[in-house]
Amino acid sequence: MSTERLQRPLTADETDAFRRDGVVMLPGMFSEKWIELLNAGLAAHRDEATSRARIWDRDEQGRTMFWDSMAWHDRPEYQTFVFESPAAEIAAQLLGSQSVHFFFDAVFVRSPGSQFETPWHQDEPYWSVDGHDTCTIWMPLVPVRAKNALAFVPGSHLSGAVFDQPDFGVLNPDAKDGVDRSDFSAIADADIPDIDADRDAFGVVSWDMEPGDCVVFNSRILHGGSGLLDDDTGLSVFTSKWLGDDVRIAFRDEGMDPDFSEIMRGYGLEHGDRPGTDLLPRVWSATS
Image 1 (cartoon, helix red, strand yellow):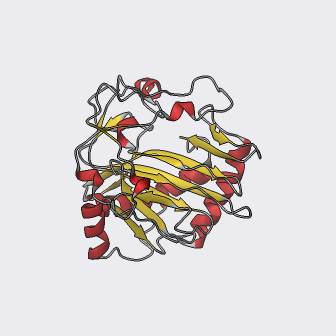
Image 2 (cartoon, rainbow, N blue to C red; image 1 turned 45 degrees about the vertical axis):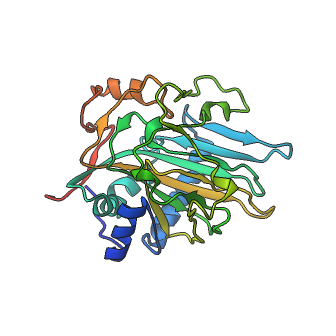
């Protein structure tokens, strides 16, 4: 169970913003010790990546974005963060859930000067779970400017739509085997609109952030960007994914990225189950 209380209380305005907009920036939620711990974990992680790791994009200058997921089983620093930091309680308060399970971690490391922008997408339709009560806590481990940070379309989590989303499997310049592929064409309700053509019309938001700040977003919100770095600026981000009361395991024919279905079945989890076991542990409960 999560052991450290919040660095500061969440305000009613912050909770309301998350539920209305699907995203909220929370300044000063994590103390320096958590940033130091995650930076130490990330340094070791880069040297001992999991089999799921891959490079997204590589330009002519050799600039890349490194990505990896579900490393917490092997990284004690990440385990400590999951079980002892305030992250689970932050998720529980924003989701309004009676209990919160940890889903997985993911890291994103962009080389200085990287011009790769994450395509606009939703998260939850790629995942091996289904439910509205999901969120990601996006934590930069270095200062980040709004123009380089992840950007969001407020309120898009409430549309009920599954968009015809990009296949992230093609972002694989090393042609690594086993990269998950997704095809939403058969189930999509709509194409993703051209958000970048008029970001103001879509109300796109992003924030200047410091280590210790975080953005929490519902996993059905449209989001993208987080690129176009200056030559002397890199970006390292740790994210944690959290599951609330209405979430069930969902194995999707259209593809999953990352695809944890085989791992989940190895832990005895099947389609329609509630999260649980040591793979998707309950970290916070209102009764604890």
